[in-house]
Length: 254
Image (cartoon, rainbow, N blue to C red; front, side, top):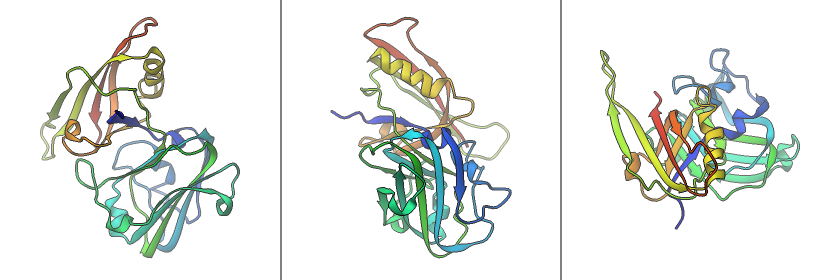
């Protein structure tokens, strides 16, 4: 049975050596905002443009199997109809391999806690050092959105088997909706998986948000399908063992 709860981050963006966009970005909303920070950190163009807006990322060679777009509703409402993801061994968009074509984005159902995010998944791609996210707008658009997490999701090898504690944290003194938090436990994970989880998500936790997302059964995430958050804490066995119990605390980011 395939694992239902997966963990992703901006793997391509986190490891980039350079990033550019073919249309001029707004000085206050640079393209780097797409790969980290919180949802209020947006990217948008300086001038609304129709046709293709292409983000070019040079990174360490990476595979991908998902694209998470935070605040994607602004793209949908601003006439973006198709999103294309490509990868290549050199900087050559025309010759690049098409990894995913989201041709029905304009009619896509949004997900997330505010129903304004988007998630696309596909079979694991080949590994490339050059990646492209191309947004095609049928009318002039600022291509405004918050995050573009392109990467390879982490599969623990099994779903959580211990008790999962999900809570809603109400901010004090402000009129805002509650944030979600999750205490997740896995039992019997391999030591290699436990170490990989620690290195990918706990060590860079202060600078690298994550996305929890579900494949088929969404009740664990309150039927939101994807949660943008940060790792608060994690426990792993102190020594190598063939049967690791791992816990992770995740808090939703605004």
